[in-house]
Image (cartoon, rainbow over all chains, first blue to last red; front, side):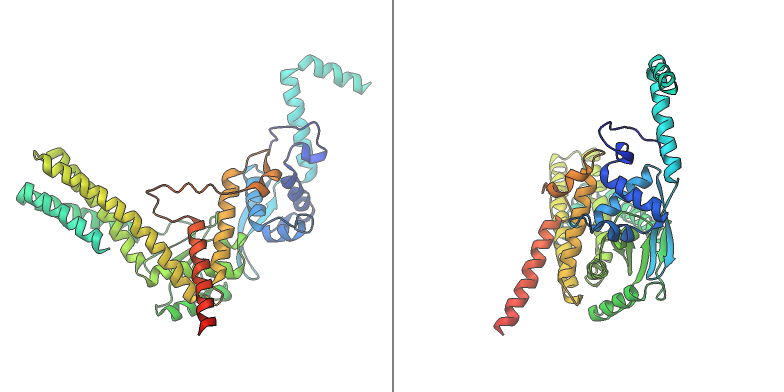
Length: 121
Length: 261
């Protein structure tokens, strides 16, 4: 679940996730549990060119990143994959901040301390 | 298939000619060992994650496959769902395996298109022939190795390499042809034949996207996706594009014939 890069020019979770993955996570944090089909339905209005394959690949990549979990569920219409979030948005954001500060402390300890004490004042 | 059988037979004759009784024992022993391997694998071929489809579970799928099987004149196959998010399908003996990933990326009638292709393999007896061709290939490799390592005759060595090369070329052609034939059979089983074409288009898109997706390139990569048609000469499967093109010709050709009647 730990982010590996931070884009200074992007806003919100787009700074640590590619835009479409960020959009999927925004939806998943709202509903907590969903199928890829439901996610597809929710975002295809904003992305008419979007295909089911794209959503499926991205959701499975989010599983590999540890942000989602996939399980088989027997539901209406038969068996299907259901995805759930592994952490709330707040937990994820906290992890992002921790990771970035850890990286800064490891690489630029004095400068980070100096800046943190400056903004604390 | 006849040509493949003939090549194997000729290779056996070479071994018999140059090794006599010992050659016969090598051939017999190899066939016995390969048969045992085949039997062991075929009884252990269902990996973990295969869930046998119950009619009540997905009646639309079960009943549609039953209807297509009846139309094909074969008995209802066992249908398994595979717990794998990557879309995939295959058949063995009288069974069809559909991965759960198919249900995530394809519409219902496209899934039936994929199932019809696998039914085509069963109807055309490919599920029996394919293992035979694969194990005969192992036999050819064994017999060629025997000729190369143990024979003192240059002719036996050269002809064995030649027979093996011929077998490989014929094997690739055979598998490619059978894929096209399974598609043709599927078209005759489907209520909406173009659903197979649409399924192949989506699967092609999926494979392309999955192969090209890079961490930072995601949003921009979609419109420029185009599969590089680099088919290896020894690929046993035709490309998606080749299959899609043939389906279009078959379906359009049938429409034109109907108009002309």
